[in-house]
Amino acid sequence: MEPLPPLDLRELLTFDPHGGLIHFAGQRVLLWDPVAMGLLRKELIETLGVTAARGLLTRLGFAHGWRTAETMKGAIPWTDESHWRRSGGRLHTLQGLVVLEPVERREEDGPAPFAEALWRDSYEAEQHLLHLGTAEEPVCWSLTGFASGYMSYTNGKPIYCIETRCVGKGDPVCQIIGKPEEEWRPECRQALRFYETQCMEGMLAQVTNALKEAERELRARRQTLARVSGVKEDPLGMVARTEAMKRVLDLSRRAARVDSTVLITGESGVGKERIARLIHEESGRAHKAFIAVNCAAVTESLLESELFGHARGAFTGATHDRPGLFEAAHGGTLFLDEVGEVPPAMQARLLRVLQEREVRRVGENVNRKVDVRLVAATNRQLSAEVTAGRFRQDLYYRLRVIELKVPPLRERRDDLLPLARLLLAEATERLGRRVTGLSPEAAEQLLRYEWPGNVRELGNAIERAVALCEGSRVEKEDLPEEVRAAPPSILPGEQPRTLEAMEREYVLAVLARNGGNRARTAEQLDIGIATLYRKLKQYGEPPEPPPPGPRELSSGSGRSGAPRR
Image 1 (cartoon, one colour):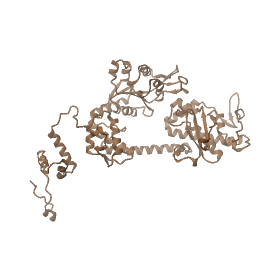
Image 2 (cartoon, one colour; image 1 turned 90 degrees about the vertical axis):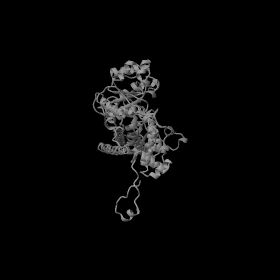
Image 3 (cartoon, one colour; image 1 turned 180 degrees about the vertical axis):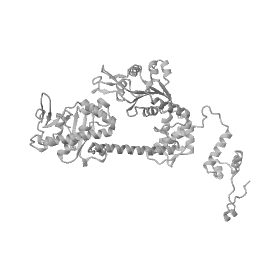
Image 4 (cartoon, helix red, strand yellow; image 1 turned 120 degrees about the vertical axis):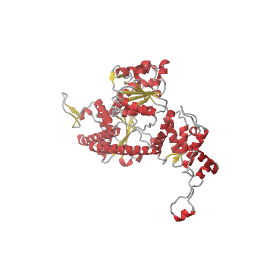
């Protein structure tokens, strides 16, 4: 392919050295601070959400690229129109947005796409990392839009670019691929929707419709869950029939009204993070971020950078300034799960942040003010850890301004079945199965098991049962082996029952299940019908009414015959 003629920035850019108007290729341009653009991005995401912000910035970049192509067509006397069509990347670089590198392809790589390029020093990825941290998806939205807009104008048909690699999500370089709209595979269409909004009103309409649909689905889901569980559930899916759990939820909502630090204690799997989210959602910070970090899952060497951030060059691999989670949660809530696992050196730094309400990034000597509500959780006995010298006493009291003790599931027997039905409804919706409930045997076995893994273990057991069951309801055989093998248990504080009382309860339960059919009940219990009648008489059950006689069947008089003795 013939090389492009050189484009000289000194010829394209004109300005008065004393200040005033600046022109690029004869059109007025502005100088913008990239940090200001980064702050705008952050504000858009926090106000509208990632989807809406991405759509706006993609369309802004598309308009910028389209306008640049339109301007450049007549700004330079091109000897070959193909040079004008291929100059978008070079103009991208001259405007200071990104540094373009061509992609070197080998024969084994297969046919080249319509357009392909590597980007280095993307201002957009740099600003996203600075203000929002590492993303899960590519973040060069306006730059990708620019490339799409430029090529769409120069080729006279829609050309859309998708970023396949991005520094903003941890890749070493940004890479884009551009193709005509019809050449993109159906699975890539989802990424193209961000180009579809033509104006702000359209985006707001999309956002409004999306919110309405989400609210409709949420209402329908709550109605379904309430119908399945038989009780009115908490908006966050909390189930509380036992007094201990009701007290925890009540204290959580009262704690949400203030900004005091909260320490949530309890065994693993009892739902400590859900309590933390409840506190956030009921607080005045609900419109800001809720950020959770598991302190036990992050190594000591990385925990400091994760919480407090780092400056560029602070350590090997620190190629960009990066804010920590305290800064990311500014104005919102930071949830430190398993805070008892924080090493001693970090405990001192954490205490200082709580006292001074400011953080210092690794490799910097500048303190930054933060406004964060801290909620911590642990499955350890921190008082014992303090006594053993493994946890700082001053940090313990700083965290334990308000303490919430979440009881284990084995002490919440009244909550177990409603919670199981709620989890079953969620699992059926998630897995697309039509499972309507629990069989009596399955429900009884759930009550027998001790649930050492608490709500998390219950959720896993219910999901397994929903996935494997063959009928319309979960049977005992669908439950995990350890749950099926659980023997009858005596609850704490419960007086042992006599065998006679247990037999009476079971016989009457089988009779009720059979709709009062005594012959079927005797058959299932493997006892004679006379034995069943004798037991029912002992239990004080009323005798079974006799079947209608021949005269009654023929006359239809409706009179009852004499009771059979």
